[in-house]
Length: 144
Image (cartoon, rainbow, N blue to C red; front, side):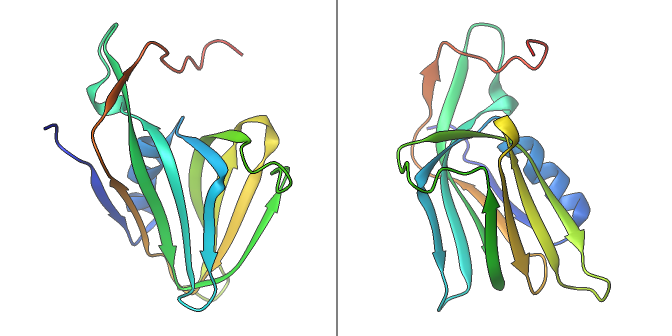
């Protein structure tokens, strides 16, 4: 069994590490959920394992991305009418409110999509679940 990633983000530096780990993760619209009662945003991802990528041996793993203390979620250019649509995460960032600790977590998606998550304070988690599988495709940022 390979090492599973478990990250907690409570400040901008933590979130940068989480963003790097989530970069190029594939996200299916139907795998996004917002629990208004628990005030939690959750997304299941197929995360590219950058930390183990070497040459022809590339892997993806199922992972859960979540944020607590959610006040609201807005999206643009995300196909709510297409639950099987896939998006690729480019980055995860945090913009603090004028009066911390609240702010907005932004998931930037390839193709111009964005999910904005208003939070009371930054509390995010990225956790691998399950076993990795090999993939022949390695994301290539030079091909644009």
